[in-house]
Image (tube, rainbow, N blue to C red; front, side, top):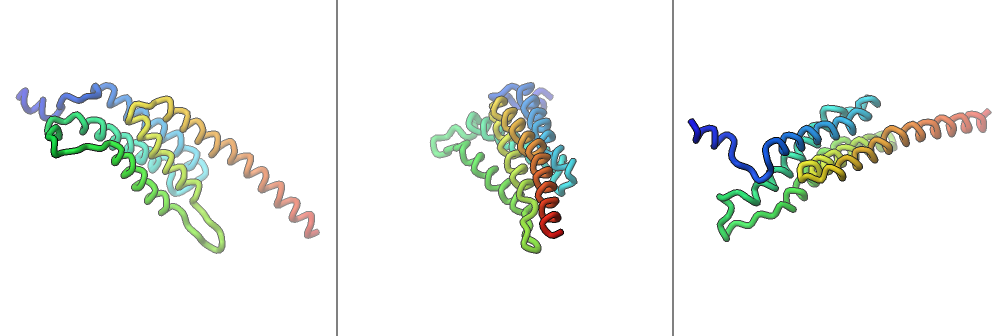
Length: 168
């Protein structure tokens, strides 16, 4: 029975409570980014951003742990955690690109795609233990999406009124 428990919950380099905290942090930071997209009723909203951030966090944790796995200690096996970062970046970029649509001379979904890409970066940073980077990236994302988004909307309303005045 002890062996089964040991196999199910192997010793990790990062303590289990820290792993869980990092995963919860990725969920919360991803939710903060996705909430704004959800508020604006975009296809990639709350759940998508949470999943992207959580997946990136899990990949980061696995990269950290794989470096210390006994089965990878052979001299012939080389583990490069940076490849995980590259793979997550490429994978999330692929998902984000799927959000971008060019229709009727207009590009749509670019900001949502960028938000997904940032959610992946936030998940990686939290997964690797860089909470401050993840927090400030999330805060900056909120400022850009929500506050600058409102400012941008006001500018668009102002310019459309100017266009109406010129046509009158």
